[in-house]
Amino acid sequence: MPRALTYPEVGATLRGGRAMPAGYHHVERRVRVGEGAEVFRRVADGVLGWEVSRGAGLAVRTDAVRVAEGAEVTSTLRLGPVRFAAPCRVVGVLDEPDRAGFAYGTLPGHPESGEEAFVVERDADGVVWFSIRAFSRPGTWWSYLGGPAARAVQHRVTTRYLAAARRLAGTP
Image (cartoon, rainbow, N blue to C red; front, side, top):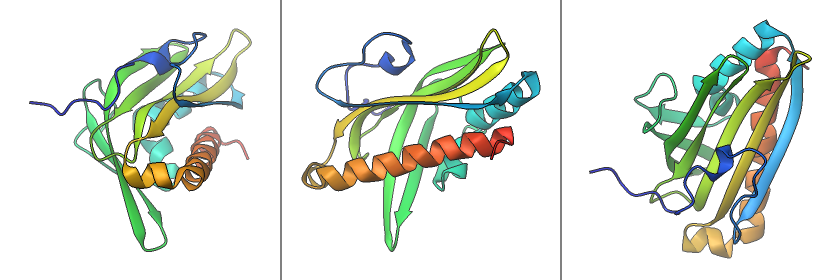
């Protein structure tokens, strides 16, 4: 039997334009990564193939070569000699002609409790955007006690995700 997610608001990060759940720290970041169908496909394939996570410096362990709903993944962040494992399950996938991405939610053992979505979109003008939406709160006693440090790490990793998407697009 699969492990239960550690939060009840499943899918809230993929509901574009709607408010995320109260009681959590929210992250919403969006960057322009380029233009055109080729850039869109390259970044979309990178998002759906876990390359944005790897490009952000995370070790990614999963049986799913490509993102799929229900797939479990453990991303590990190394900070000096300490490693933080973050087990998640994919709770939604987008794979449309001009929009692709996924959201995953936290499983027991993750330092936080919540959800994060990674979406690449090509707008009507052909501009390609990469966005991250997340909501989280401490999921362990030590992440609760390390609140400001945990937020700083989350900010750093989010910035690295954005940079990885830009690299996939070929944008400096």
